[in-house]
Image (cartoon, rainbow, N blue to C red; front, top):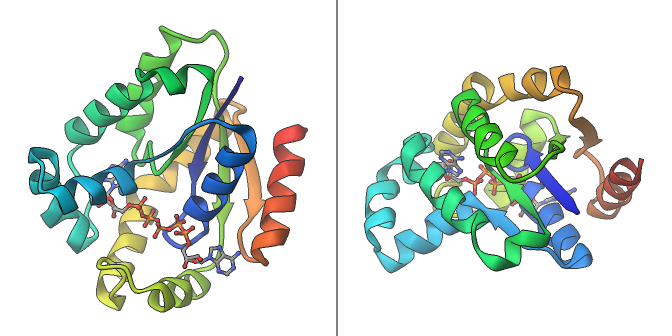
Length: 184
Ligand code: AP5
């Protein structure tokens, strides 16, 4: 059963690669960012609570995302595997996930660390132009990534779960490297 976490700075290509791989493996692609954006669009209670954080590049409070991940992982399509994209994003979220998953599975999930330099990801995101893709908000998302999320690289390396993939190459090359590392 494939259970993967995608880690990496904004614009590294997590969503692009996770979506393709999930379709290839016939498992759900669970993106916390996408779930939050959909909730914001529909103005659900979750969306209303999350919007000021998402639009300014800050992390949404742990409890909100942890509840949504727990609920999503309990759905029937997630019983045969999944790709989590954008969660965990903090050591506290990783500890929550570990506790949640060890009740269900015996072996640990693997973590794809997709990386690319700041100037490359900034250029990609400015070209895309999502609501949180203004230069100011992108810079803030990168700061938050460095302060809160990058420590997860050591966290998962120490647990021997980390797979590194170079995100600074064409999408096809990233896909090919990704397939190689997850097969290894
Ligand atoms: P989220 O949606 O997860 O945003 P992000 O991590 O900033 O990631 P992006 O979607 O910007 O980048 P990506 O790496 O997925 O790249 P993509 O494939 O899209 O989170 C948004 C917000 O939600 C957060 O800021 C926070 O507020 C909140 N949130 C989410 N999860 C949370 C959590 N766990 N805790 C608290 N808050 C949370 O690609 C980007 C662009 O580059 C695309 O245009 C793509 O076509 C292009 N591209 C991709 N790969 C390549 C390539 N190899 N070469 C050239 N172009 C490429």
